Amino acid sequence: MASARHRLTSTALAAATAGLAVAVAGCAGPAEPADPAAVAARAAPAGVAPELVYVLDLEGFELAPQSVGVSGTDGMSAAYVRRGDAGVATVLLTTDRGGAGEPCETLPDAGRSTYACTATLDEATVRLEGTDVDAATMRAAARSVRVPTAGELGDLFADVPEAPRPVERGDLPEGDGAPVDPAGSGG
Image (cartoon, rainbow, N blue to C red; front, side, top):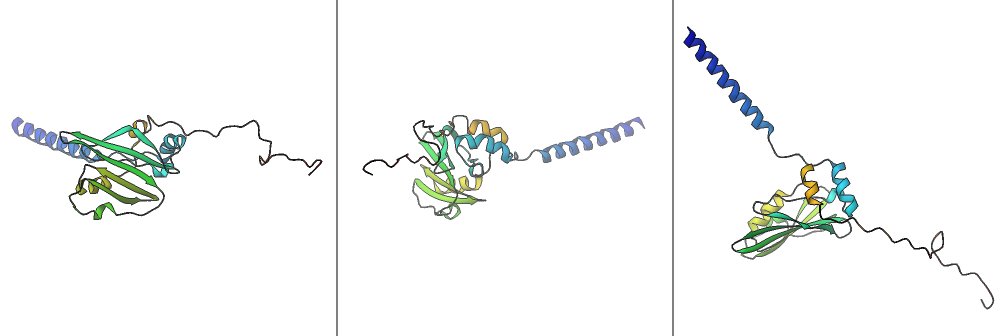
């Protein structure tokens, strides 16, 4: 009798443990995108529009933090690098609010080592330029574009300087800044 009870308890314990493992595994998914306010807090001082901040998850490629900066008026740029025996491969990501280009998903396997293509996400046009990569890598790069997680924001903007402030000039008059030119003799 004790043996049957022991077997039943062991079976119940094993089933509970397996169920817990499945539940925990189901919770571990991809990290959530950063809150828009957190993105804005890091991007805006650098002059980058928060809605144009995107990153890549491309296997073998790492972000070159010193490459992150403003592109165009308020877009973002970031370079991703893969170092290997064959040399260095790069994928440059830039974002802006419009434009067209060859969609990354339709890139042909042309045997080139340099590619340029676009992907559209929400309001952003994401342009990808690859050097020493193949078309499959560029298609994978386009599929991996996403909003960064809260944990990635610090590294993403670590080396980005704040946008320069306008210079205050003390020699301009108040108002519209037009010179004061009173009428006088001869005029």
